[in-house]
Length: 102
Ligand code: HEC
Image (cartoon, rainbow, N blue to C red):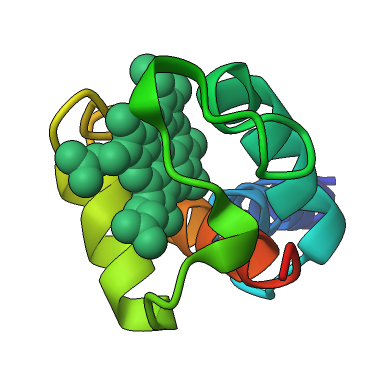
């Protein structure tokens, strides 16, 4: 009976270690779109063209993926930095989504 108990504890510990693995390890475009709509569409619009508060039209942006990731994390001008709010993986997902707006 004791052996069974250890097995249960081991199984629980294993399940926990799995669920605490980085949730966004694999890129998921749908997730990036959902995050974009939540955090970015206010100024940039769902299609990237809104231009609220002087936000540039993202469909015309020539920034590379790395530059977008850095800009989203650090912010610029009227745009707030997002690195405190989002994980690096989430920022990458959003950057990837903005690249699909072109
Ligand atoms: C408060 C309004 C606002 C929000 C919210 C906002 N932005 Fe911006 N964004 C701006 C403004 C304004 C600029 C121009 C910054 C500058 O050049 O001074 C900008 C610039 C950018 C650029 C650079 C475009 C280029 O080619 O120069 C990208 C990419 C971008 N934003 C993506 C995002 C993403 C992704 C989010 C969501 C995480 C977001 N923005 C949220 C206002 C906003």
